[in-house]
Amino acid sequence: MGEILVLRHGATEWSRSGQHTGVTDLPLLPEGEERARSLAPALAQRHLVEVWVSPRQRARRTAELAGLTATAVDEDLVELDYGGYEGRTTAEISDELGREWSVWRDPVVPGETPGETLEGVGKRVDRVLERARARLDDGDVALVAHGHVLRVLTARWLGLEPAAGALFALPAGAYGALGHEHARPVLTGWGLG
Image (cartoon, rainbow, N blue to C red; front, side, top):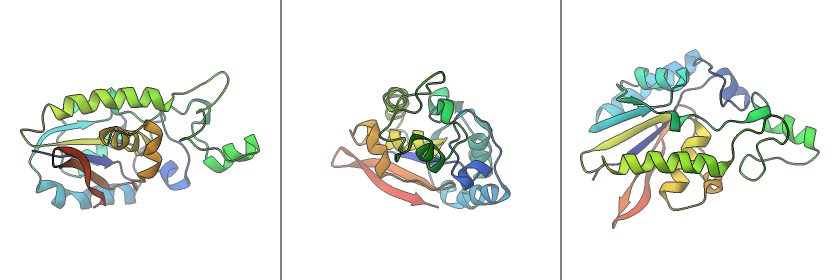
């Protein structure tokens, strides 16, 4: 049985600075491009039957540089919509609120631009996982996307609530492998590359 490879895009200006990047479509930095290229030899060893990418240019470019040919662009793989917190760091948001804020615990943003809930992201990635499971008998499925959405997807693969994605930090330009052990979903590799 194949595995699901979750590949986070390479570094962008905002991923480097810690700014939340949901709907803003930023390009990769040169080091993000180099990191993506460095993944190609390891990924070339896999039997990929599907490569699904987020529509954001940073994910599509990462897939291309890593030697992957997208078989589908999947809207369900877009990053969490941070609403009014788009482009802001956790420290800035925490300072404004006068308390520590966490995307894993707190609403994305109250008010006029509410953003997306973790539960909403969980429903999106559940659809991705359902489609991916149907292909695993034939080989591996690669998902090229973004940090928070892939962390929620990993939590859901393991049967956990979306907020458990907090436990699965994935650096820019790295990937993880989701597989099975004794027919149970498990992490088979993490932070690879």
